[in-house]
Length: 382
Image 1 (tube, rainbow, N blue to C red):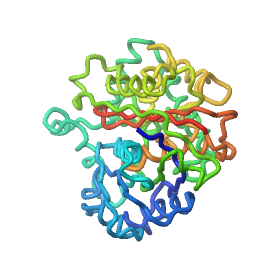
Image 2 (cartoon, rainbow, N blue to C red):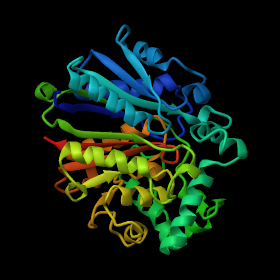
Image 3 (cartoon, rainbow, N blue to C red):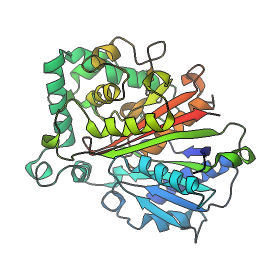
Image 4 (spheres, rainbow, N blue to C red):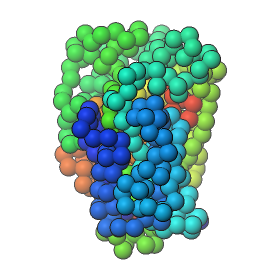
């Protein structure tokens, strides 16, 4: 199996992109990635999207996107795993390059969420239809149950939980592609509308349009395209129960644990070797649960540690330097690829004011539903 490198990245701004269609925003990200890599022809491509048919009325997007970016005839595949679709697209591209089947492969993700009339109903298709969605249980409701159990068991206060979105927005200030690059106070979080007790509006990631793409090639060819390739050192993926009631423990995400252990084992590293991490913080509580499962904090301590500043610059580890899903935005099909882009730019030392000093090893964690699927990438500066 060949080593694989990232040689180019491209993404759109995240937000309400009313003047562009789904193919337009994907093309913008894809062509920017190809320009960054200095390539004009692809051997293959993968497109991550959760629900382009329901959101934008367009299925068969693998063919649409290949044609629209001038790659007609190139094999193109759509990848779907709810909010982990983008991360799985990168994994698929990695396997194709590593196997020797192709040399220059694009992995991208896209979602045009603001075009839909009922985004909540579309997101609910990633939950268990018979046991959750049919009975009106939403994703905020599912994560609220996780939060309530965690808070009752470990004593996390509502004010401590509010510090997580505050941190996210503080990081996003320096991200030019972020949907909400502005500061937020604890008071703003606590006074925002109740969505599902104890989660308020400012605990929830937003509805977002956006696209993100990366270009992969064999590591031994990366020098042809860039002076700063980033190696994909390891990938771990796993699935778990979709229905929350099938989880053994509402504060433990088994799929995240399995995917992380596979990635750590493949890379030959542990949590203490990681310099920064992009996690799937779809809700404030998710950042805590994921950070603990990844091994950065002991179970039951992550919430207070993050509230005390251990997950930002100068702390134990920087979590979500991009601003995360909460402030950067969450176009579900593109999120996993955007995480990879943040890690790549950090490792190439071109992250601007959000640059982490001496960053050499980064981790991204992308998750579908309430832990039904998870993928972890470990990236290394070469």
